[in-house]
Length: 81
Image (tube, rainbow, N blue to C red; front, side, top):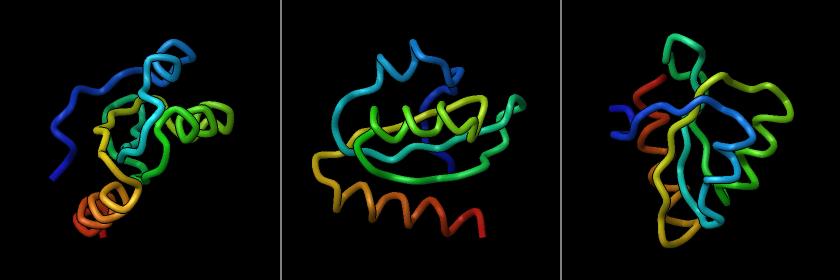
């Protein structure tokens, strides 16, 4: 089950709008196919994804703790395997 959030283009503006808190994010290609699911401090993670060209689009949900983000990411990763 994908994150129930809209896709956003992975741009500097999107990264700047991302919260500076833990969360789960999905990276996708231009057609919206999920390429990766990961977790961490969202703004930091998305800066890296943008710098390395890891995807064209992104969507995320924030969490209260990094542990919650890790658990939620694991649940979402299971559906891709």
